[in-house]
Picture 1: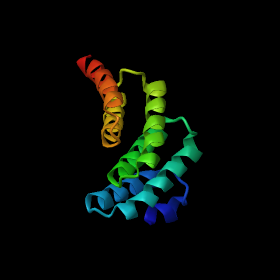
Picture 2: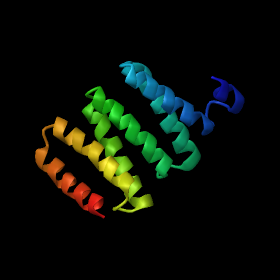
Picture 3: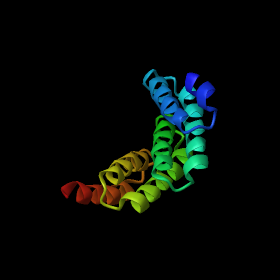
Picture 4: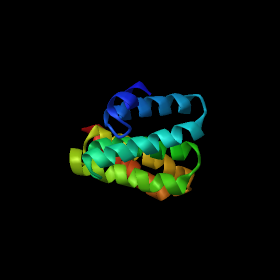
Length: 131
């Protein structure tokens, strides 16, 4: 509230507070309270940095994870795919953050019974982690 009042509701400084509070709610099992916070954080980052910035990818990944926990698989998948594409483009295909995003995506694929797709991505992860 203080950050929002001090800098405005669309200031990127607010994103850290929103994501930390969302994480607190997630850890408390209050997933429905976490969701709008991450949606707002994603919107703020998109407006400030553009749709293909790594800060957007980070929040998209976190929101996708929340949707995964909520079993909202259709909402999670495009966010994981987007976060992965942004991270690969901005950080390179062999970056540890790409591996982390792939691991999260694999969890979704396993939950949706897409085992072969999950295995394919796990092979990519193994290649990244060997370096």
